Length: 185
Image 1 (cartoon, rainbow, N blue to C red):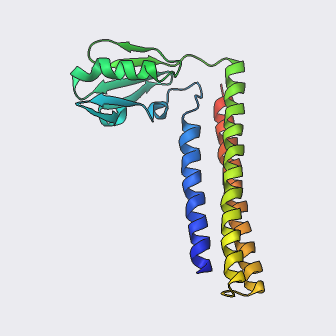
Image 2 (cartoon, rainbow, N blue to C red):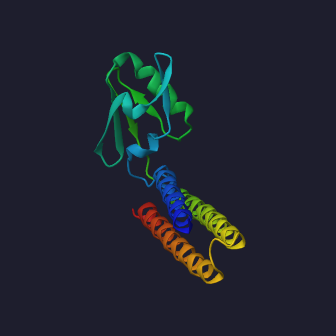
Image 3 (tube, rainbow, N blue to C red):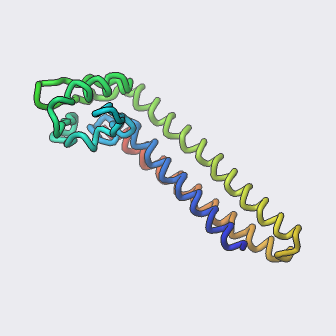
């Protein structure tokens, strides 16, 4: 039973790291990155679909992203969805594909994006600590119900703390990598 609690704790932490990767990929680094379009859905025949399922997305140059839809009839819908997403990007429609030119980031914009990355990381660290707290509370209730001993509780709590430290280290590493990516000219 305690092993299940720890495994569940690790699974929740891993999902949180996946979410961090997704959020950090949304931050602009000054280079064209198809992941900035993640989360943008386009209405296609009555259902909402992600752009990457409706079009081929390519990065032919460092500052250019091209979107070539499989169905040309949806070109205007994709363009509109990108404009409504408020990414500070201007899509250019030439009738067959959409080109998005990524402007060079100013020093201030880079610093703001680094701050956002750190903020996202700090919020996730709080989530990790909440996951740790939940797991330890579950372990304490097992000890209260006499399903595990006090020594077992200490041992399992140490395991949860080591797990938390490991994932907080991963958060710090990912945020530091993103910071370097953003600040690189």
